[in-house]
View 1 (cartoon, one colour):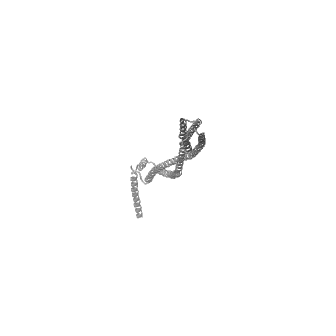
View 2 (cartoon, one colour; view 1 turned 90 degrees about the horizontal axis):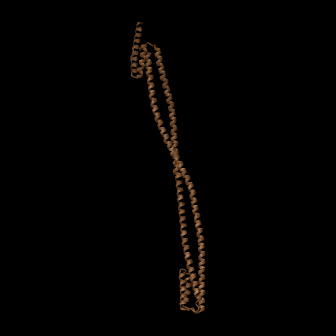
View 3 (cartoon, rainbow, N blue to C red; view 1 turned 90 degrees about the vertical axis):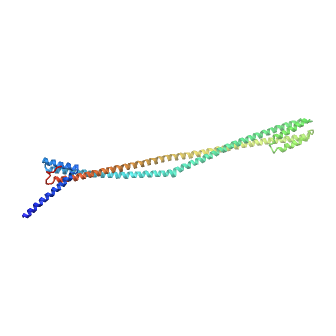
Amino acid sequence: MKSILLIALIAIAFTARVQERNLAKITTDLKKSTYGSALLHLVELHSMAGGPVQELIDAIEELINDLEDELEELEFNFQVRTNEHNSLVVSLEQDIQDAVIDVNNTQDTLDNLLFPRREQLQVRIEQIQENQEANRKNYEEAVLVREQEHEDFELQVAELNDATAAVDDALALLETLTNPSLLQVKRFQNSLKNIEQKIKSRSKMAPMIKALISLASNQNFSDQGIIGQIVDALNEFRNAVVDSINAQTAAEAQAQEDHEEYLEQLDDEYAEFQRQINRVNVDLTATNEKIDQMTEFRDQRDADRKQYTAELELENNTYAEETDTYTNLKNEFTRELGISEQALSVVQSADFSNIQV
């Protein structure tokens, strides 16, 4: 019996020593932090004031409960924020992807459809304008040729009219040659040479007038039969000249009519070219407007991409900062919770009257 009692006393003494050592260690650990020192100070004051131990225990337990609630709230809020962050990141990444697709598709349409279409229309307009230039060149050339032809016609008619007048002069001289003097004969021969000069460019009539000159040069014009032959020949020549004038006048009128029809045809052709240009310009204007619209849309979507990228970067940075804040707060709450639990164990110990901060 005495042995059992002795063993019990030794056990109690050993337990007290162990508790004393544990309390000393906990007290030392608490003093390492400001928060732990504050709690120890609170315990010391409460001990000095002689307040009920249970009241202090209840206060520390309430503090522990508050810390646990705050830690739980911190965890909940951070989880909510994490969910919001993940949702926002998915949304922004989708917005960025959509913007990139829009930019690429729009650029593809511009490069492979609208830009080639515009170039084709511009080339078409240049081709039609070249046709217009060729048309106007033909028009101007036709006008110049017609003017030259008309000048030639007027010159030829003037020459033929002069030849007709010379023939009339020669016929008038023949009427006076009954008993011609040498001077009169000479004057008539000169009138024939004048006719030859007037029609020298008319190759078809040149042989006829040469024959008359040859005939007249060997005559003394005393034979009325010869004079009659010469008169008939001159009248025939005159009629040929008049016929030539009439024929050339008719040809000139026809040439002028054909020329005017040709100019009208060229004008119609030019007007048709202009209508074609107008139609192509309408298409070109619509194409340019479409290019402007798609270019503006592409630039806007690229600006959206940059904006979404900036927002995503900002969100990631903000979330990283908030994660750091959360981690620091969690660590602080966890540390304070551990200190509070250590303080509670001190208060719940057998004796804390000798605690000093």
